[in-house]
Length: 214
Image 1 (cartoon, helix red, strand yellow):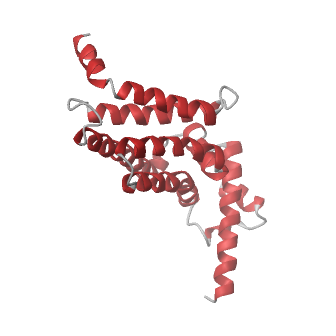
Image 2 (cartoon, rainbow, N blue to C red):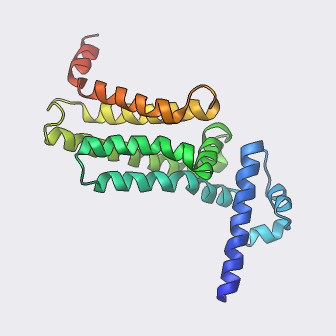
Image 3 (cartoon, helix red, strand yellow):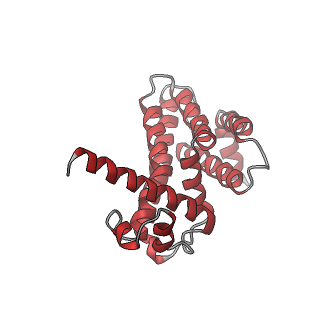
């Protein structure tokens, strides 16, 4: 395939993805067909099959718009030469900044969380989402563990619990904001939630002990 043909194919592929993003966002995954997507871009369904073997393949590629940026900011956090807790805070703040500044990332995330029925058809794709979740929790756990080793946190900090707490904070705020963005400004309250997490993190042994007694 010549250079021009490859460029044309990539542009067409991008148009299909953009149309799918719009229709999945508007109608949900289950109520959007490849035929609808093809019509939106002025193509036949057969022509769309030339780029994606089925709707799930298209959905999976579209969801990379939500996954890839998160892997990127986690990689930056893990290679950040700053102290580990500073790197962790930067990662968490960047998570919220992505939601606000990157429309495709935001729309793909919203489709996943609010507009996708978790059916057997999607089981193969969900494995990649499970892997992302694991990578985010593990990455934050590594930063917290390094903080413990560098004595920035108490030695008896429950690293796994705190990593899960951080992830639940990020996902909870994300889900709430995507469902009702009028409820709060993510660029204002996101950092405040992160700072509240770090306030609790530095007192974690006391709270862990209290929880065990209760």
